[in-house]
Image (cartoon, rainbow, N blue to C red; front, side):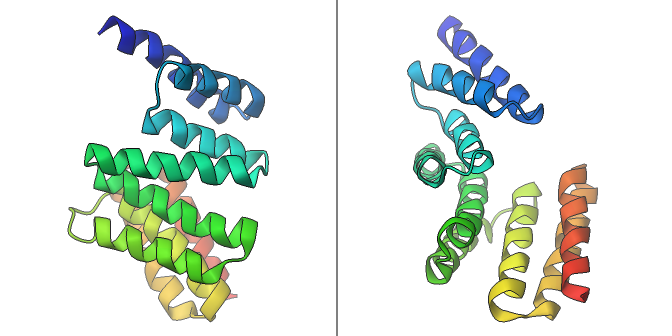
Length: 173
């Protein structure tokens, strides 16, 4: 119990630094947390550090490992969320449409049978952006945007609602 509390402090500091836009402090905090043992939460945070610093290798390494650890834990929702972000990363950093679609399919295989939640909304956001970017399928993007907005409202996630509205606007243009 005491060891978990010690590890939680740098993990919480890492997430706080991310929220405050202090990427280097976040990196140091997540590295400190990971020095005490890998957790998917610390790796997920480190993936965000890589994303914000435009360090593709760090982003992919951290997120792929977080995905694996969430799966090992049996946390399908979190694994699906990470898979959705990896799909977006594949397009953003590498322009790999086929690999992005593969990650989306992995996310669906994990989450489709679960009760709706915030992670379903994140999948809808990424799938909608990819539908517009790759297939110019604005109808699909609008449906997914509406789902993300709805889930954001139901689960009190304003960032999801806002991104859903942004996706809907992108699909309408």
